[in-house]
Length: 102
Image (cartoon, rainbow, N blue to C red; front, side, top):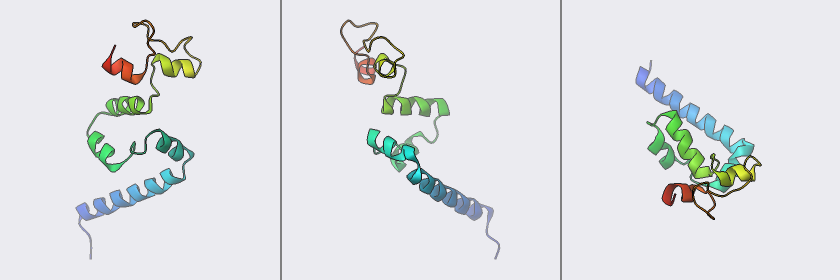
């Protein structure tokens, strides 16, 4: 019996999701991302961001992984001479500092 277009799309989406999950589990980045935040690619996070523009999702991931152009990260990778906040004397420019204090 022929399936409906909707059922075919749903089956294809499920198969694609399962294939991606297997690929991700075997990826060397999986363990590293899991160590940063075990919930980073969980279903709940993905459902929260699925309707956002890609640039907003990228920003959220940068903030969650702390790999964003703030001086603490830039200093760690050798791109900034100091981890300090350029606006607050004696404070390290972390995500928490940037969002909550500065």
